[in-house]
Length: 165
Image (tube, rainbow, N blue to C red; front, side, top):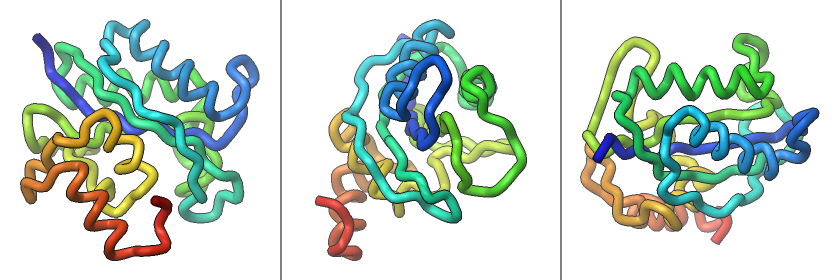
């Protein structure tokens, strides 16, 4: 058995071959499999408002994956997949993007290295990450505060009653 991760997926730009953002996320799951990363569970695709300057709504999802890679090595593969889908680095922060893949949680606990912090620094404040994660990893715990994904989403929505239900 390998390492298990909760990955967040996002897209708000059409792809020339894959089409609409929802289809980009499906293609990204297939790309993970093509890299030898086993997709154990994939959550629903939800639509969310953008953070920052982008005007396009996002398609977001989450997946539990298994691989023999440690977090730094997995990040390299995720960035390679993003580039294969046309993502470029630089440009405007939180701008329009074809594909965004983030390591949210790792079954091994916390991880910190240059360029990567697990758990993801902002996942606790993002309904668009926690809502699809609830379906695939409701009982996964944040290694820093011990709360489950279910508890984190409940806390977020209680603090922000206008968040999607």
